Amino acid sequence: MFVSVKRAQFYTMAVVIIAIALISTSIIILGARNNIKDVKVSEDIYFIFSNIKRETLERVELILANLTQADKSGTLTGYLEITQYYLDEWIECLRNEYENRGFKIDLSYNSDQISYTRYWTGNITASILRAIISVQIEDEDASIKQIVNATHIFRLYIGKIERVDGKLLVEVNFTKIVGYSNELSIDYATIYINDTLANYVGGGVYRAELAFTGSGTITIYVAATAPSGVFVEALETYSLE
Amino acid sequence: MLLLNRRAQYYAVDFIVASLIILGILSLVYTHYYISYDQDRAVYLSNLGYRCLNVLAESGELSKTVYNEDWETLSQLIDLTLPSNVYFSYYVYRWESESWIRIVGPVGEDMPDNGLIVKVTYVLSGNYTDTSPRKVELYLWE
Image 1 (tube, rainbow over the protein chains, first blue to last red):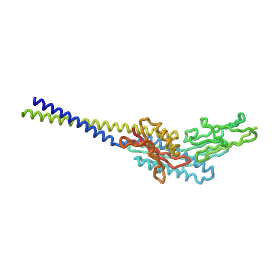
Image 2: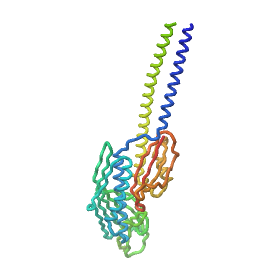
Image 3: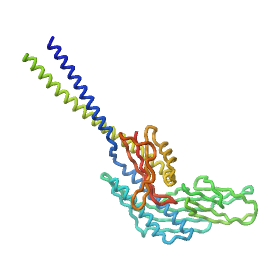
Image 4: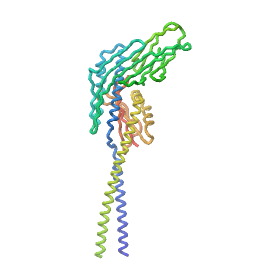
């Protein structure tokens, strides 16, 4: 009887001690887990490369918009210096950002391969910035390199002028071409036709109805504007009988 | 009496060895499980964050809201893009004099002191009115 009681006490103690040990271990592990603030996640290099490429193309586009605008206002002094300034600032910014995050990054261009041209012939106008940019990014596991054709073209032309019920229907085509892929329209540009805001009807086509009841000739003036001002414009005279 | 003492010693040794084995195995299982759990959640949150910023960047909304400093709309857009059980807070920086200057943040929920928090980043190249790049740092947690 005495031996049985001792054994029972021993087992009870053992169960209690094991339970306390298990609970303590769980609390310690859960506490340690909750104190982890940042878990190191390896960044997806392909995703980052894709972002860098897209934003670099956007950078070239805004350089073209600024060049065209300065050119239109007669204040453009040297397109190459301006282009290089904007590209160098962008490259420095990316290098700072991604090297701090453990990547090796290299963006470079050859200034001989940069050119800016424009065709302003009345009803059709275009501005073109050609740039070839080498983009390379690597981490411990992967390396991606691509030569990006960052040629951008803004093209604006008056496609159709029709007289309908005492009104003048004007259609304008505004196209943004990036590299060799044709992108229709541009997000942050708006089109004005004789100071009337044109509606986007799809396929790069903008349309406005102008009130005009007289006869003779009318000059249609079209301007593609960004928040900073007009950057491409076209003119056409139209005879009304 | 001697037999009982010897038996008690056996029990004690048995108990100690069994306890050590149980504790060891449980510690291993817990530790492995929680590290792998955290890593999986971190990858999940990180992917969510990248996808969110990517979608907003492709639609042009990220650039528009950041350069217009419309933080309310940006918060609403991020909130719409993320699942309802994921919380966020973000900072926005401007590239100036070869370094990042904070222009706003933290915007969104208060960041918790404990738990898993993941950071994702997106760099914007500028727009027609302001050519200086911007950086969005998005923090996510559940």
